[in-house]
Length: 296
Image (cartoon, rainbow, N blue to C red; front, side, top):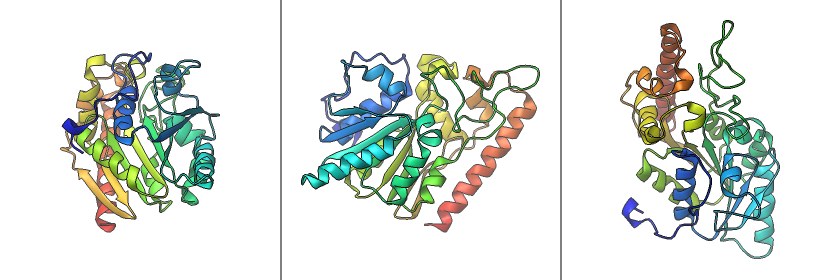
């Protein structure tokens, strides 16, 4: 499907309360056009729940199930198995959660579902912190980023650890499909969700979704930041199909400082901090490229 062929019908409708420039809202609006009406969504506490489905209102025009923080993948598993038991093998059951509900609190249920190769699609929209509860750091928060639990002061200045590599962890589960996507590269986004819709077994897509409130950037810069994340190597666009790994877009290796300077959460970083992050990005990209070559 090409961008111009996307359906006009909105399954994520206007009237939701997402912030201007919210990457998660853009991602959900577009992925619902691809997955279509025959989809069930399972979501824990997260921004998406707060801005789109606070009872009795919902912007999602599909069945929507709100679950506890830690069990999105487990509940999606149960729902898919129940549908199959009733003779329905066509409905897409999608677990969708933020990085906190995926990489941290929901990880044990996610790993279990992946290991059993449950027939569900799991989407992690990655805004790199617990945004709806007050911008606390998560395992997916990048090095140096300010959050309310990695404050900037005399002792520390932002997060001192590097971002957890969730796509690599999910690939290690040997599931049918793992991909990263970005709302800044919409055709690649469409292609990956179309693939994931058709594949049977466990599928995982991690979408890069900037948060203007938590990242402290201008709301008009969301897509520019998405593109810079890929160009600098901060975000690798790749996919694994039954173990075959493909890099979808090689970074230009634009200096990472170009990505950082648009975001207030990195404003305090020193030249030494930026060099440390740049070195990590360079090594990460080299490792991703080498891994893809070994699994081509």
